[in-house]
Amino acid sequence: MILQVDPRSAVPPYEQIRVQITGMIANGVLPAGTRLPPIRQLAKDLGLAGGTVARAYRELEADGSIATRGHRGSHVMAPPEQPTSPRVDEALASAARAFALQARQLGADAARALRLAEQAFDALET
Amino acid sequence: MDLAAVVLFVLIVGLAIFPGWRVNDRVVTRWARSAGLELSAEGRDAAARYLRWSKRTRTAGGLVGLGVPYLVWVLSGTPGQWPFPVGFVLLGYVAGVLLVEFTVHRPRRNSGAALVLPRRLQDYLPTRWVNLQRGLAVVSVLLIGGYAIAPPHPYDTGPRFDGGVPGLVLIILAGPVIAGITEGLQRIIVNRRQQVAGSEDAQLDDAFRSNSVQALSGAGLAILCALVGSAAFTLAGPLQNNIAEYVLGLTGIVLFVATLFFWVGMAEPRRLRIRRLTDSRSPA
Image (cartoon, rainbow over all chains, first blue to last red; front, side):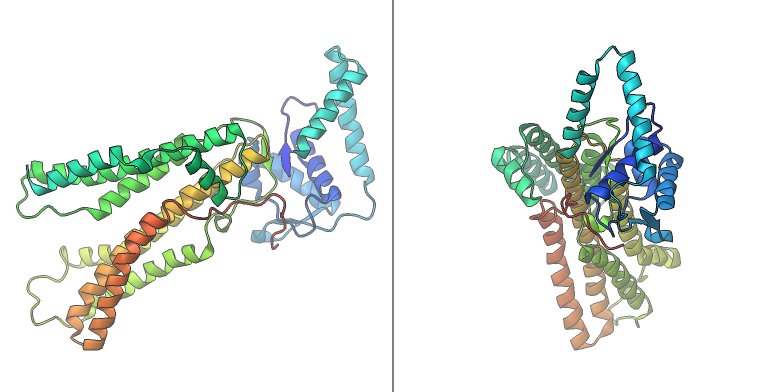
């Protein structure tokens, strides 16, 4: 339910938002019909430009993950049949490559980096 | 020292030593329960800080609203009785609510995290109170407008409204303006940036917002009830109709009681509305 954007990440913020919302929809955290925050509100909360969140929402609309109906705002559509779409796999692979590269540049081995990644996943659950 | 000065002095000293000032564990637990929250030690500290400052700023604001008009009255040498400034007391109280909302209690800064749930006014304030704010504004226009066009009472002397037509327009618009400002401030509080690092932060922040929004609603409704109550009493005379006189008089009395009910009752609401993270479904 909590969206986290890391400004230092190699993955662009709009993509971080898109991937996380897609994950929440796939996991059932955001069921079909759930209303998403307005672009301006989410951008303000995350400290991002409105255009960044707007782009994430556009991508999610193109995926068929959400629908926007004028002033009634954006809401979640029913999740796709497949647990992960090729687009999500592609984005995850891209994020993983950036993470691995950053970990290597910081001198961390794979075990340490993966342990920290797991901790980050655990933190998202709480 | 006149009676007004004695009243002011007793109020200031009385409120300074009033036991209800103290925010202890029991007060924090009761407040958290009203929002359905189980707080960690850190959360309890944040809640205690918010509640402590909330009481201080609201009371100080109310006292400033009471004291400043008194000083102006004394210094200007205006003859007659001291006009007890209920409106100014409520305005000072509202300033206290806003001060604590915008300055005191946000524990996290620039966390880069946000809840994927919209914030809407009805998430923090029952819709019936929003409708009542709007409804009282409409009723005030009708009653004051009715008084303006009612035939003069035989005992009426002098002008019906000070300031002529501009004065009349100002009084007629008072209700809608008060309701509009109240709702506008409530929406600003709801929409302002929420910085969170976890679920507890978000729910605590929601509870603070709900507390401020409900306190504002209480003050706004109190001012509107006082306005409509006065209008009902004033209109009762010129109508010269027994039934209408009784109905409007009774309405005025009920609304004056309601003024206190809303102001005091909603200052510390028994139930705080917050967004539930587990039940995210909302109508699309």
